[in-house]
Image 1 (cartoon, rainbow, N blue to C red):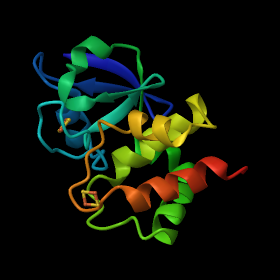
Image 2 (cartoon, rainbow, N blue to C red):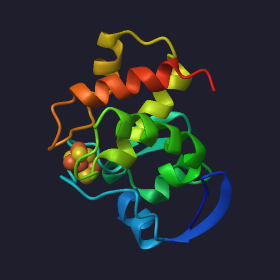
Image 3 (cartoon, rainbow, N blue to C red):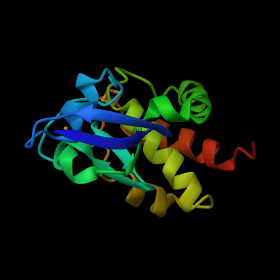
Length: 150
Ligand code: FES
Ligand code: FES
């Protein structure tokens, strides 16, 4: 089946199976920042932006997304570079497996709630699990990114 999506602002036609999840489609089309984790909507490493909302791509069938906008970290390169800078400064990087989805979530948070409180940051990121860090250094990095005026 053919499905037309806007992937990272570019219109693209994807050839998919009727029961194929967006996670599988994206990875098949070499969008490898989208990671495969639990595949049960629990870990968040597969998350992408659907229009302006974070969704786990392992939970949605690609055929249901005709004409929708999907953003992955490949589509926010400049902001992702800034986020990576603050993560590096705060020592918040370990294996990096959670980083692409975390960067997208932080990017989205800044657009929706640029003055988020500590509690709001925690609540917004609750679906993004990290196996390596204790979240504290990530939290500090996120606060610095939110305060970045550029
Ligand atoms: S792989 Fe989708 S939420 Fe874990
Ligand atoms: S840095 Fe390893 S899962 Fe987050």
